[in-house]
Amino acid sequence: MTSLFTPLHLGGLSLKNRAVRSATQDDLGTAQGQMTRQELALYTLLARQNVGLIFSAHCYVSPEGKASPLQNGLDSEKNLPMLRKIAQSVHGEGACMAMQISHAGLKAPGGKGPSDFSLQELENLKQAFVRSALYAKEAGMDGVQLHLAHGYLLSQFLSPLENSRQDAYGGSGENRIRFPLEVLRALRQACGNDFPLFIKVNCNLPQPGLEEEYEQELLLLLEECKKLGVLAAEISGCNFRAFPPSAGPYYLKQAQALQKAGLPLILVGGIRSGNDAQACLDAGFPLVSFCRPFVCEPEFLQKVQKNPSHRAPCIGCGQCFRQLSSHGRLCPLREQGADQALLAL
Image (cartoon, rainbow, N blue to C red; front, side, top):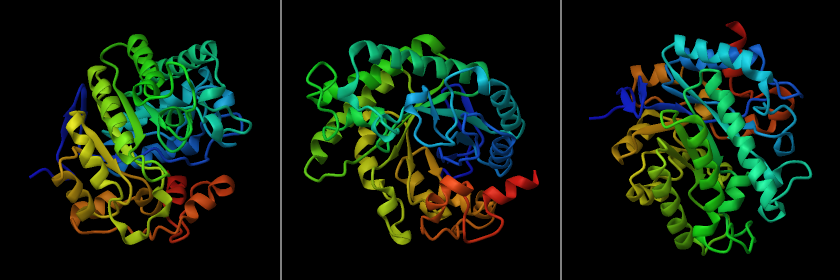
């Protein structure tokens, strides 16, 4: 039986287990988008606590796509020295790490949505994603994850509710996936066939009645991603903050319907115990992703390894999101949550 601690060879990556740290905004950077020694400590802590694959907090690919005041940027060489240190430290602890790259679109202050971009601006944006991926590769990272979820720009392109373009980039599911796929092709061409690519995507929409259409769109997207050599897709949803703590894996059923595309899937959302993780593995997902359990309890995986039924003390209160902009991602349940423990490194 595959367990959370079974090693996995995924493409060219050798992962020591099936545990993934989902991209989690930490607000430990600077107003200029620069990464800090606190982030070096945070990623070292995650690797030291036995996480197999770490996705970084999302990094903007261009300043106008910045989502929050202390978000990190991967739009220039400014973060290369710190990224190199982070990559070396994470690898020294036996973990792998990929950078998540994004553009906030309408979620940026004064931002633009899919219909607001000219064709030339879309081409410029593609090149911005390429530059960011090349910086990640130059720094020694193990890949990049393209953020197609949570209402940011590429997620907006996929949504029939937000993409009202009438050209080749809107109007049908095939057209709505076109620009994200063009970005992925550009990344593949620039970074080479051996550089790992991942995506993160919502499995649902906020408006009922579009589920069947959107599922077919996602299946087509995932099939094309498989052809491009994308290693895996992390499956999330647009409403992850709305579930009660007892909900368990939020998107298990929706994600199972996407397995037929044949691309390895990583499930995230509401997975807060060893039993939750095992249920996902038993359902055919090769990797399981955690967010708030690591915020609340840095040693979560060590406790699960000793006791497979261990559950993180996270109660889903959402205070870590509310405190994010002014205090970093702090868990109010315990003084030694991740943001405190990292200071001891």
